[in-house]
Length: 129
Image (cartoon, rainbow, N blue to C red; front, side, top):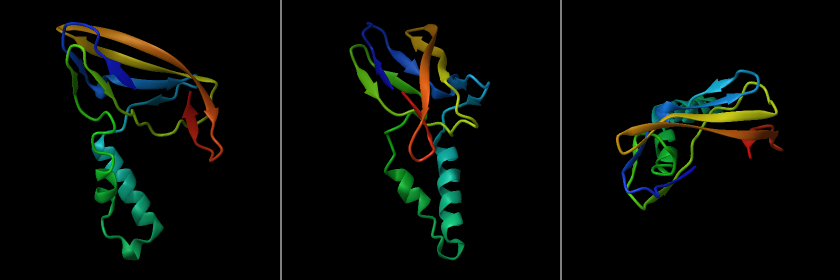
């Protein structure tokens, strides 16, 4: 997701005010660092419990700064592009809506919604187009 600030005011985006809904009433919040850490730790442990060394922290370090995790500030005329990461939907549906409840432009809060078409990826993961 790219946020381009074409205003003369500061934009503040907090991913905790964002949700993704599918047509099946499936509701997802963006993953933050702690959620990603627990997922990576679980995957590493499930692959080989006896040789688990805590490498999930090193793997997550490669994502630092590449996804929306905490408040993001976009100065006037600036642009920020990062990923929003979600767990997969329980069922594949035809569509989804990304809702941002509060995006601050200066001191004013705005709500946005973006419809998406979902499709099944070859690896059986849900992708958003």
